Length: 363
Image 1 (cartoon, helix red, strand yellow):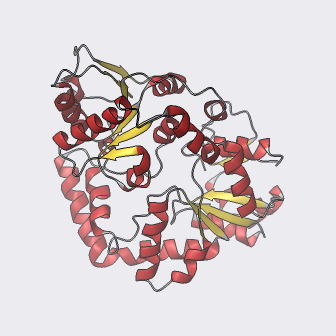
Image 2 (image 1 turned 60 degrees about the vertical axis):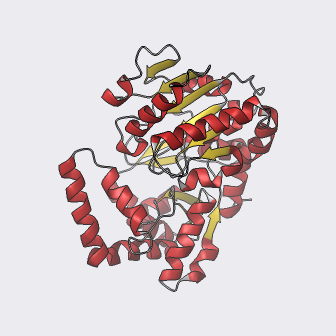
Image 3 (image 1 turned 90 degrees about the horizontal axis):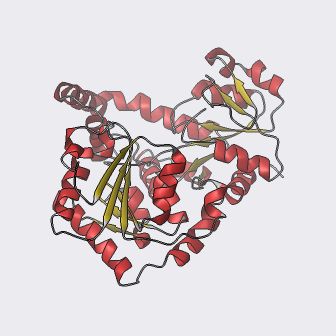
């Protein structure tokens, strides 16, 4: 399944000596440098189809409760299945009601859509949650192992399993983070400038463009000597209030290589999202010796040794968190080479691939 650049895992597994192909329901790989097999949903759900592929093991992106037919077919074909959660672990509307409400409602754009989402949240809380939660439990039962990407995600799933009396399934859940590209982890650690970068698809309500704009406006009000670069398409009138500011560049959508170039010489990546499962830009920033600041979400809480978090989502507190993190750089409490040395072995695609291969039972 194609999501969040699984190609890095494919290339990592190939680099350590395994024969790997990506199977997806539509060819959107854009000329991937590895084999890609496009299969229909009917083929994905066919035991005979998977037998014909002669696989030893399969890594399936399930988001904890999806791809049930694919997992069943692979298991029926005798293939060792590892499920990849790609999740923040806030599962179960009765276990994590506030997180689920925020995810369902804040992901909508219009007031009417938000009202409908709130009503659907209520219905799920009262009676529809059973089917959804059962799919998660069945996925964990059927898969040989399940990968989650962050400690907070595993802790959230542990609470979910405890609520159902299925603590036995926690042993099948393994923590393996997503890798970054090999050119980042094997390049020289770049020199850092007094620079802040924010990356996102700003038309996605999850990224909270409004909070980003308000926090940056407050931060810049004091005339701080710092460059701010905002990358990503979809910005609306909220970010437009910063247009023309001498210390702000609104770059719009740019190629990934340009995003990396801006992260490379920046000290801080600012994150204002309502939630994140595993943010690629955050890991890329850490791999290049930078740090993070922003609103408190589980992802950033996991990285708190390398981040400054606001106490709430109020713009003034996010601005203070950003200022505090930049001050740590100014006082030399942050050292790019030390940060990169800590994170690069953890994010190297070959190292991540070895951990995945071991979990899949591959020699």
